[in-house]
Image (cartoon, rainbow, N blue to C red; front, side, top):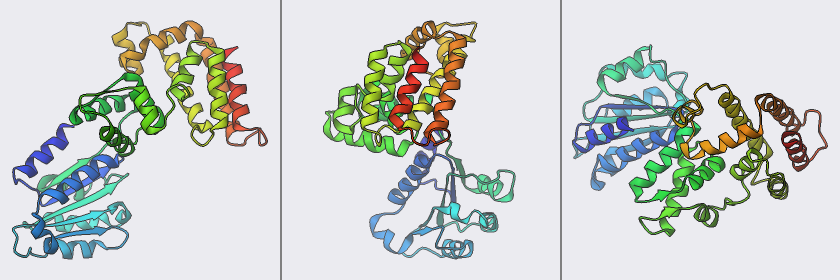
Length: 334
């Protein structure tokens, strides 16, 4: 993200702000900026007296302000980092008074995760004027694959589309979890490597043949035997393959397929844009559309909703998760 690069470049150039208010649903970028400030503004010998980490659940706004107003000792700057500041959400606006007249020698970092403050109110407006107000927005699922590619390029690696998709299917949009797994791969693979589905299976534990990605593909291609083999594997490994996740991913797939049927322009560029999918997977949707006309897709979505209720114990309290999936596959593929 250009905004993050700008923040880091400013810090490198010693152009630090008195307040960094980092907020938003995606904790990954908040942690990255906070960690960079924690590790780079002060020299190691300055940190003992001049760097402090506080936690929102343990302090008040008044205590944060009192620490921020202190002068540094034998250093030009002091750094005060407040983690889990969302625990102070009821009183966070009180910080506006300090933001109006911040201590120039203090770098105050507020890590306000999973929430945002009201940008119309005084605190947000004041921080935006005198410091850095940063909102870390959660990526959509279709954006995560590109993020993985970019992250790996920075580390000196590439990744196959299927391998990238496996990570998203298994880990969702949690960038911190994905980054941790990519770091593990970087430890065992040579720089310049192209990460494959086999690498994912061997080092992360996601089966390259028995996963939601392969199940979706088998369903789309109407490969009944393969779909049932995967369903059987899922029923034997329910903790690694929760039914609720499988239903959610299949629902997304068939909802996109419904959208595909409604498109007038079914060219690759438009399909990729409207369905928000990697062009690599467009052929998969084209095949599935031939196998599942619009009316059948609507029926499948209804069956998925019914299975979702059963997976939560509504109308099928004694039915095993594996049996619900097998019943669902029969309704989808017949």
